[in-house]
Image (cartoon, rainbow, N blue to C red; front, top):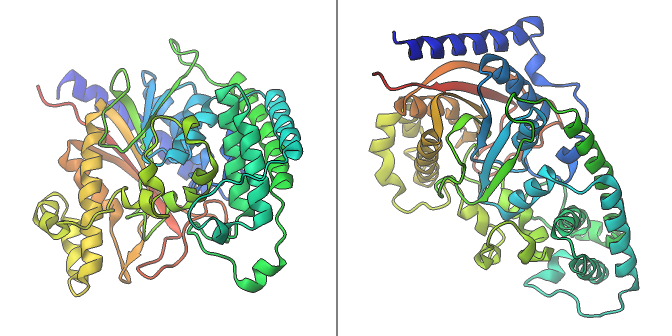
Length: 451
């Protein structure tokens, strides 16, 4: 064994000991049943299937103890930025990407929100300007009246114009996030699901949402969260040579170019558990907010094609295209025996089989790209769940492990945790499967090529 290999083995052993120590001291530690409601920037906007901050924070603590040289954390599926915020709080630099423009805007605001007092002032100014706005030029878009009542449309249009008058772009971006949460709460779509579903007629007839009142409530609450964020940043942990942690955010898929200055020291993420159309529709959940946000203030360029259909963003994510899905079967089965054992269970349901193959092919490419961006010896932490497809449980954890092993990674351990009811909102049962009540955290380490 070379000296580099011995060092990697020692680091992995230390990390394993730290992770196992938590379980020995409390077998239910990783469930995080009693942790508080998301505070600070973690609570700015209700994004689908958000990760548990305390879980990722604990993993980062153990990573820092086992590998003190780690500086840069990478999340290729960053979503609402839970790993990003916890990385910054722990003194790590961060690089993340996501295909969803709403996710990147939210993460940008979370990483650098205005101060609490500035946020309060900005919200009050918007409310004042909107209240005095007598314009009748309401924002127009396809099917607008399906999703919003005329009164709500009028007030949202007034709020939108009032935000556009704010000169500071970072303040505007914070206000757009407040508007996004307002849109979610005052639209005609049920808040009990991430998919867009209009309330039943009898419910709609009784609803009287007031957009300006809701924006005021959301804005004031987010101003408090902004204060909590900066209070925690003042108390953040520091690395020897990294006293001002920075977040670099890229709007795009994992296959897009790597924009970080160096390879990452660790990866921490929760990738989709399947194609977004049949699992968690992140893009669909963001569709209505993105209709109201001024696209000039989004992070990176915005493709108007994203709004041609409510599920367009989801169709562009992993597994969104079924073209030539079956042609990937042999190659995938060579990488992962677990997938090879699973697929015959769907052979009598070719549409489901193609969906699984399309997702796994895209997922395999994503894992390869992610692996290329890690330095040798880097750890990766994959928070995963296994949904049922055609009444059969897809072995996503084993598939992930086997693909990563084919890419030169070794397993350190796998942590199992139960999902506390209400702590991590997941999609409910749908026509093609149901989500899980447990998750696993797969911990891997990238090998150093032999000399």
